[in-house]
Length: 270
Length: 97
Image 1: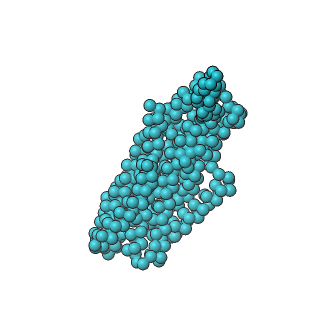
Image 2: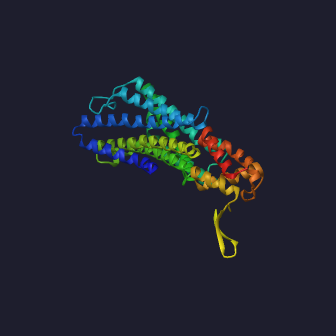
Image 3: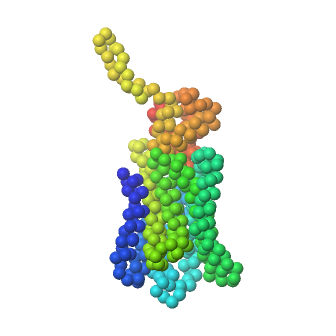
């Protein structure tokens, strides 16, 4: 039952964010809702990943992966605290440049890619092959890479041009785009792992991790395609923030599912 | 597991539970709680073949300690060392001496 509730929690919190944002009344209040929700949901993600890491012992393979994810979300909370409610300059004349904020984003992306890499390699480490025929595995990786390039590629292009034109302020965003592409591509092994572990308690963790990555992809996708597909920038931003909240809460739920499963082994022993 | 009725004396039957599963099936069933039925089946098959050179259905109780040892690195990776030890200890108890 608690696994099902955990799986529902990203949708419930994203819906709560939408309701709170729509009820906020003014653009300034809406930005404050987004800011508070960002800190809350990223804080939850950090707590969930930390709870999973803490349940493993020193030297356990997955402990490092979860600790890296926890570190990533702690840095993202710090970034939100540093950046304030309006880092994009929606209400101000222009976005405020902030080197500390950019460094925090860069470091968070590095930790996220490292954590995703460790978790994606869990099958090889366990001495098993990723499930399914080779063609399906290759197709899953190719599909994830194509989706990653579709949603993060346009931003990568813009930011890379900025760097080549000598604008060092876009360097951090370039690293962030590269991090997104790497993490999104690693969604493929998460999905394959979730499929292989379906019906088992560990399956919940991987389903939720894959869901979290898909929600992060939707955040990037909304940033790229939202303004042209949705009625106005406010609607695009609302959807983007809802997907971001869902992604963070999915990571929280994945961490909790991992912790509960490990506890189930020990409780069963007693 | 299978419920069986056997005749103890004329006109008198006794119900007993007899273990009819193979050791590999017992291991598979316990692992499937955590790994799901597909991965549990594949893991038992892979490591029975790799460590014992046997098909899962040919594994005897005497082979089980080696099979459980072969499963250890996989379980340690997925569940952590403490949880792996707990699960293997439970399986050892279930499989008997």
